[in-house]
Image 1 (spheres, rainbow over the protein chains, first blue to last red):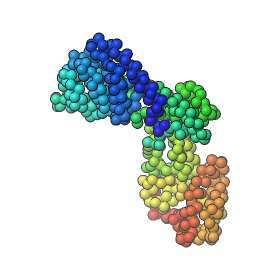
Image 2 (cartoon, rainbow over the protein chains, first blue to last red):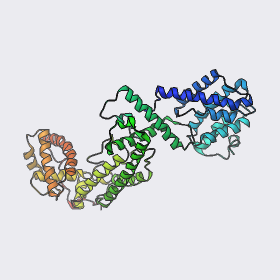
Image 3 (spheres, rainbow over the protein chains, first blue to last red):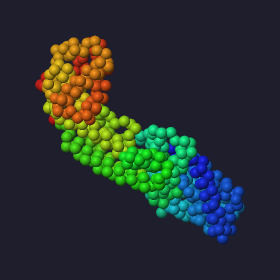
Image 4 (cartoon, helix red, strand yellow):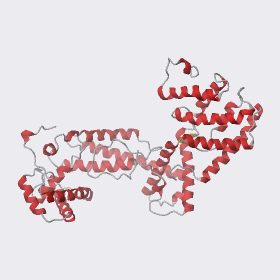
Length: 157
Length: 310
């Protein structure tokens, strides 16, 4: 084990757990007209493994997707036609900004911020969320808040 | 950061079969999942690979300690529940920390009156290490600011408190040896060797023991520490024709003689000074070949030329 490379058996277990949890999420999200098909679940789980690898993170259990589903499924801006794609983008952003903020925010804090901005200033644009507000949040985490930077600080305080 | 502890530390002397190895990996992975959950206190489902590596290294170090100090066999890692073994290891770690603190106190009580910035910074660094040492998540980590060089440095393969323990034992040994001599003579000897010794990265005890063993070659008392040019000529006559191995054996006898004079006859001291012997013999052989022992057995400068640092 050199030393934290995941062994195949563990990978398979994680994938199975992640799929199971996403299927269970459908029971809640379907109330908002949002359902993930088996193909979409497969793709999201694959995206998760790739995102973890590209960000150099290790995750146990099923992953962050269920939390993202519960947090965003009631958003007015979440449409069924782009549900899977948006979740994938949010998942990528989540792992990326966990690193960028040097793990200073808990999962719940980061997701809460993402939901607030997504439903607010970003008006459902994951691109806006990741390109501006999350960057500002992580700058704040690394360097402290700049009171003169009104543009970026609007979402923070 | 030291080379991370890992699986290899848990399979030191035996070959696992492939199935056993995979089983060990699987069990450690599950243990790491539990440990990571504790570390993040449930606040995060993921950690960086570097953090996971550190947590795993800490677990491996703790398990290794548990196995070795509890008299268990490594096979138990394949059969026993690992969490209780980790907790057992942590209890051992707490005990070792207390023992190391006691050693540190003894070191502080025996600090020689010979100034050196690296020495004192290391003593302070060890105190800081005790304040920050984390036996639960980063037990394997060694302090980075142990800069004072010992005659016998602990092996790099040691981790965490194990390294600190050995370091302190060896440092205490050197303190006790140095305190057998008049500190003003030690200072004078060091000033004669390297005037800025108090600011340099060097061992304070080594030259004292080298000169002491030189006086022993001449059948003299080791305590005065000073060696004259005439003394060196006599020494050369004693050493002429010796190869490195013969010289090693000869110096070892002289070191033993010094230990007897200082009434330090224990096995630890003798074993400790074997390292000094092994390092000195090739230097001495080279110096004999060059016909000049003045850089090994130092003549003290006259007192009026020394700016004593007390």
